[in-house]
Length: 445
Image 1 (cartoon, one colour):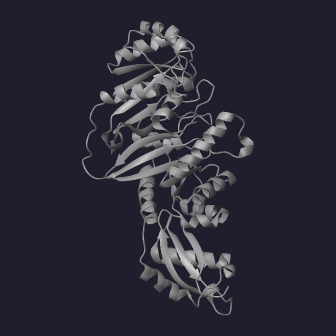
Image 2: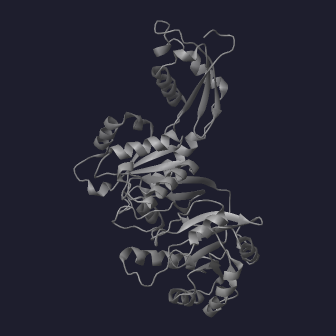
Image 3: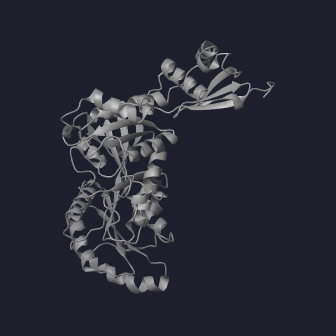
């Protein structure tokens, strides 16, 4: 199992004190709203990465948590470790300071640490949107002993292009891929504290994302690149989804928005539940979010090592009784603490993604349709709905269009009967199916 930067691309890391505008610069460069920007120290905790480009030169940009030598809490000790790893892995460092606040003792301390890393450093003085103010404060930052500062305003897009021109000019050449890979974007979702970050750390056998006993440790969505054989995964760690009544802070609202965006940009979702808690109402809501978005899905019952008085078949049956639709999706049992079946989840993700991408032939579909015309809800004694033709119109998720004599006659029973028949004959295990109906021209409604 090899850890990779996506396609061997060079890496650029953004570092600096809390609240100097690192996330705003990250979002500006990547042209996304991926990193949460919030006027509260410590909003970014994990490393947040995104493949981006400037002047046709691709690279991985990483946002980091704020460096603070004063904060000795356990969570900030872990943030510091993530900053250190980002610095070690980066080819280029963007050292961001706050022009409005001026040079601080912590800036001087961090500059000393960065010089020891022996990396190319670009000193970025942010929040300078006034030329006169810029000239007054920029001279002070020469005391850091780095090269000439770059005055920018990430919020107002001032000076960022000039910075990037010089950054890409010294980017190392991307390493070519050894062979063609399959790429799968996987959003890892679930309630707070079910083991989402631990799942990624177990794959890497190191602390890639911060894990803490306090629910809500992950706030941003965190992309991590991982290769398993010829499959390259983008593993998207997300903030825990909780019921609206339990959301109290604005930053949690932003976190939930980012999680929903991560689901939409994924190819597949790994939904983790706490095996000790069982399948609860919030878990079912999360599954509904994933499937409504048309994403294939693997359900993982995590913390299986804690359950001593149950068997997997018995536990599965309990899940099916709570939500029968889950029978259409893989249910695995994992322990991120011991590593049990973690790689089995990757295998299941490959399989459901392939099923979601499967295309059937029109001939095979209509052969199946003809065999259904007198069965179940299509029996002439039941109603007068007639399906004359079916075609597949999409993948991820598989989507089908059926031509019928009257769309008003379609019932939920018809819908389920057709979907179950498609699954039985063509697979599609682990993926939603979209059915569309259209009145055939010339037929009376």
